Length: 444
Image (cartoon, rainbow, N blue to C red; front, top):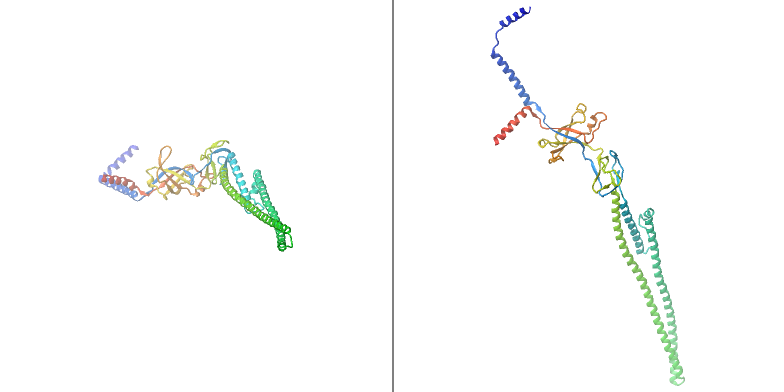
């Protein structure tokens, strides 16, 4: 049966005419032409996207904040833990304040002492019988017994100075009153002496006429003359005493005026000194309080504490030395990627890009459509000496909603970026290197 089939097939083949070689070649040429034309047409019209690839990580747009201290000191207590979330202004750590407290207490005591002293002197300058304490002095006295003692001492001094001043004025006023009484007595005696002198002189005139006529003896005339001379002397003495009393009154009044003047001059001099000392103490107190405020490191903004450098109380911290870092909350994340030096010319701000979150599978989180928001102006070099350009690519907040359940974006996550360039055809990819090489060859 098999032999019969083979014989039949051989007879059929013998009956067919032999194929023509030209027809086969024509068919092959047509197939090749159509295929090559189709490929060239596809290469000429089909656009292919070009992309610059970079590796990087997610970072906070405003970066983490490093907390440093302006003043050196010893760590008293650490008030936060690694990973703790803090709010703006929250204390993070506290330094020892022994020296700062002493400096502030000394400056505060001097400030209030000179403030109360200045208040006392102002009251004396105004001749006020009541001293008004400066604002806040009473509260400071209740808070600090030493300041209360200073206030009490100034109050007692104020009363004592008024007592001494009143005593000096009172002595002079009493003296003036006595002298004025003496002057009144001298005036009365002088007036009485003048009356007696007038009477003696009239009597002496009559006796002198009688003596001239021989009706009286000279003894009586001489007695009257002696009485006249005595009264004239008494009158002169009373006038001199009155003048002396008047001069003493002027001296007492001058002493009172000098007492007032010396008091005002002393008050003005002491007030100027007190105000200068108070201003200096106020400046030192403000500086001491600022130092005290800086002994507590506070969070510059809300964030998460990380990378704490000091834990042990008593640790010495130098001025300007970092103590911990703070990762800001509610801060937009961006992808920070490194670009090769040869690729930076193909990347610009606003250029479309795609991000792949390496930590998640692509089928879970597809590529993220975004754009370039920053390209470094110059190359950067890392610690290993590798040169690169830095680019930042925006990460939309909506990306978090596309993550698997329970997953979140966090700074430090790795990413892969594809910065999309201009679209070129496959034919352009083939011909451009040839044209560039030909152009360089012709230029050479």
